[in-house]
Length: 296
Image (cartoon, rainbow, N blue to C red; front, side, top):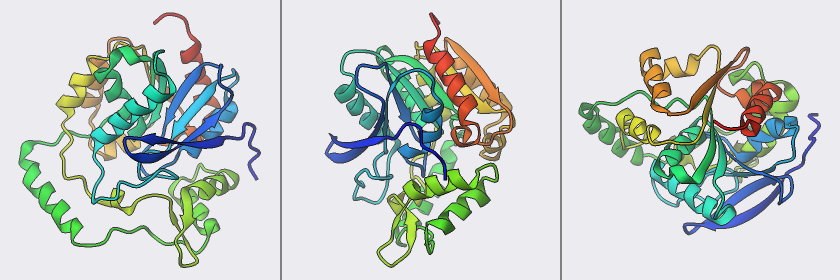
């Protein structure tokens, strides 16, 4: 079984009317860093990176609304601006004065990058782990997308059922062959929850599985990224398979990198999209070196 070097603790915070779960490592008084998980993930996913950090940090990682131990929306859908507003509320509660260090993976990285452009004075350092945005959607796609969303609403959303956590762990390994059995078992403990019928399902609101009715507009993301003033680090797998599968071309990716004023990038070999699982030690060292570096 994976040996946890730094156990986490939990507390809850009222965030815009929802009961949010925050996971913490380290002690108050140490430099703060906020870790933001991706879609269909949870805060505990960062455990392996936190264990590999060398300096003393006060790490705060929320479960986004509708994920993990945070409260569900209670509606039909989740909207990206809500994550940005939730982050703003969390930062007001946890770091009301000092600019913050943000580290986000995938969706969490996109939230962080957008927030850093909307409130640039609030962000001191910005790290995005394989968070490249999405392919642009032309307006002509809007009617079809909205129709698909309406069709989705006619059916109840649901998650796959697993007989036990071992089966969920096996699925995690099937999806990511780099994930060893111990890490998969740890993640299954936090990613899964009892389904009330003797089985296990993902810990979250099945409404997340529905297609989003709102198109992603890359030009809007670029406009926000151009306003980011914080030194910015993108950490990516050397082989960007997911980015290309999602239709973000090398040209669009180059335009994204150029949007940030103070930008650097590090590629990680032998890793897929989940760098914090595949290469936690190296990912932690890259993040920590950047956060502790002087100047821009």
